[in-house]
Amino acid sequence: MCEIFARQDPEQYKNELRSLRLAGRSTSIRLEKKFWQILDEIAESQDMSTPRFLSTLYDEVIEIHGEVQNFASLLRVTCVIYKQETEAGRMPALPPQALTAAE
Image 1 (cartoon, rainbow, N blue to C red):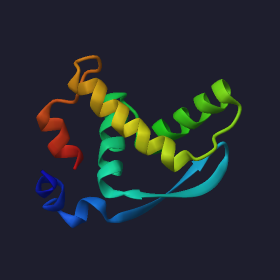
Image 2 (image 1 turned 180 degrees about the horizontal axis):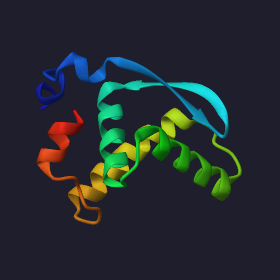
Image 3 (image 1 turned 90 degrees about the vertical axis):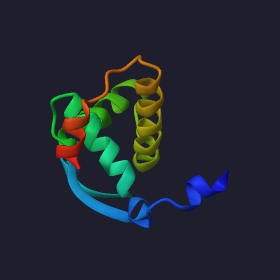
Image 4 (image 1 turned 90 degrees about the horizontal axis):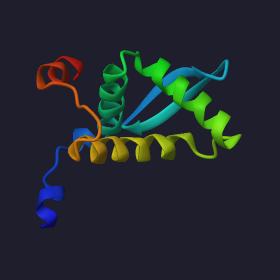
């Protein structure tokens, strides 16, 4: 069973650092490439750029919870929730041709 996970392309879990503005401040976020691909997909499904989606998400978390304790972890869990909801049919996924263009 672990072979499925062990054979994955190391490029997918290579770290990637992206810089953006959150709450008017410049910051950098380091995530594995696969998470960035999923975040790009989510942003595109919302007709937003990835930085705009992340900024909107950040602002909404602040509004709901008053603070963001660990934004990188929030983003990883966001990706998992998105994939679960998409697979369950509760959230529309991008068509395959859009995914190819986004990657």
